[in-house]
Length: 64
Image (cartoon, rainbow, N blue to C red; front, side, top):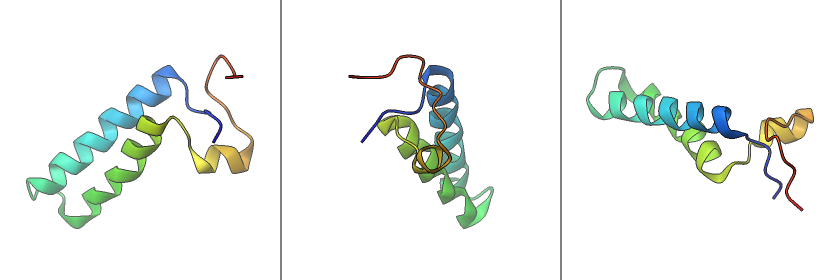
């Protein structure tokens, strides 16, 4: 698994994911808020499968 999610991208994904999950838990946006699990997971694991398919990489330093 190659790391392809960089710093700012990672923080944004975690914040958005947590916000969506919290809104779903509070009942403000319904079940669709659980989609926040996706950006949260990609932010925590620093790997986005869609980025891999598209050949994108927001990580400034490639791991060896």
